[in-house]
Image 1 (tube, rainbow, N blue to C red):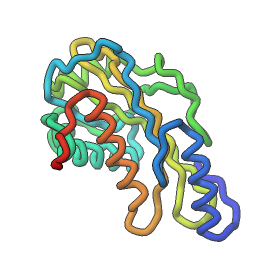
Image 2 (image 1 turned 90 degrees about the horizontal axis):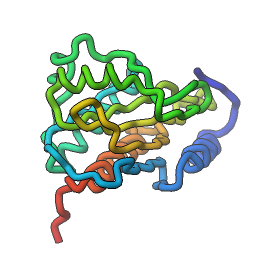
Image 3 (image 1 turned 135 degrees about the vertical axis):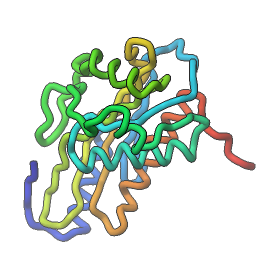
Image 4 (image 1 turned 180 degrees about the horizontal axis):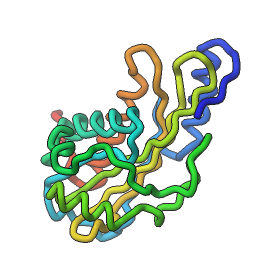
Length: 205
């Protein structure tokens, strides 16, 4: 869904940035990512992980693939590549009921609404210890320029039974030249996931 009004590109970027930064308390220059553990006693029980899209939206699928790639570089996780995901749970992508009541101009979040049974089935098919599902069902475009606000939600599930261990509020900007804003947000998602689950690669001094 798109909503248009006319304004210079710089003004649009500023407005969208304000929307994104208001989405959560942990914000960077061009994104907002708030990763929080829901299991206070979390201790990693494995190293394999897959990152998948929770919708069939092309941007959502691309986002999941980009987070997979970034996570592979920033963590000790054994990350299932998108091609492996597509083979294991064909057809992929799929529409998975996500943690929200509605998604029009914003996402009305309800973390209990995710289809845990289906997610558990997917996790078993992928044979991974952890499954990170990202839902980015909408991109709100405020001008005929390409910059758009992409709100998203994500959950980290642990086997068996798709136990939820973390949640993420995400706000991204897309459509800038060379997608620099999107790449910054993707790297922040991967960084927070790796660090909060104690699987981050130590930075060289």
